[in-house]
Length: 416
Image 1 (tube, one colour):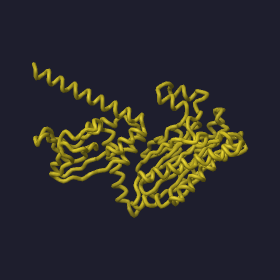
Image 2 (image 1 turned 30 degrees about the horizontal axis):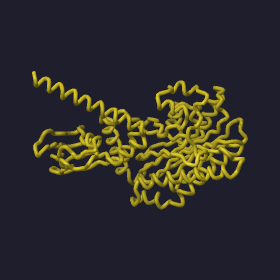
Image 3 (image 1 turned 60 degrees about the horizontal axis):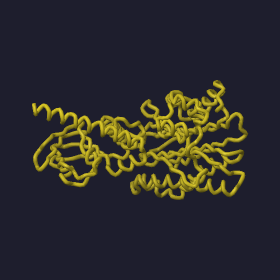
Image 4 (image 1 turned 60 degrees about the vertical axis):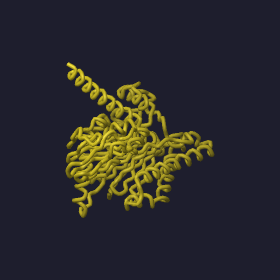
């Protein structure tokens, strides 16, 4: 997927230097934004070092990035590469701070977007953010690593109180201060017309989501980054915010349509939309936020099946989850048909949950289309995103409770 980008950065009004840093490698699809912290020199040094180290590491291993676009590398390899690049940056900052007393305690946030082929990899540490503007909707793809966000996630503070809390913006995670750090990543399909924003908190604390959305909807690619930075500065001064001294940095990246592959891109867009709607409608995923759905969409596949195809046999050890998009299926126990399934039905979730062999055989009855969610991916997703895992398990428990209640009512009815 080809991209076009614009960028802008401005030092805070009370600062002599800009402690933000940003870099773009358009050829490899790499976009980086960092917000430094730590003394007179520390913040600027940490932010620039993080950008340079991450970019150089990725350039050194660019065959992996280019290989994915060519179909010879996996998503998992690409995510591991991005994570390794950022961890290497963390190590370099930590070592420099330990070696130079004047830089002790320095650190930086990092927000990154890598676009290769039709895939986007988002990675971040700290409170710099990545947004996606698609179909007139703005989605925040990152979650801040701040004390206030941790308290919100634990149900100990509301967002309204967090916005006014004096320590709300204190980072709970950054590159540099600790020898080890956890990097959060997200995968998503890139569609023609997608617009991404990478921004430091000098922008995101000054502008509301609605203000960012309005700017993205009404501005050209050439002017939108500068407009966001100027608007954040204007809002800070108008509101006399204590944040007006924050540096403000923005990168805006637009994915562009390839006219020669227009039909193929339209088919991809429809496929992603079909996956998204199907997952949102299934009880297991209906409580998940948009960024979680995007990750599952990117790691699910559509299967075409012919009549008499067997999805799996009773007793098979296979825990993938399936949603029927088109066609009809039969469920058999001991070679006896016990149920028929059609569009909108789903199966496999109970084996995924119980980790037990299949309790029935599922056979295709017509030309059909299925959405398959990999059990292996879902296991890893739940481990990496415990909040989403809790929501999935809560919905599963609710569904099991409803099924048990219905069974009990049927038994009581039959007994009477």
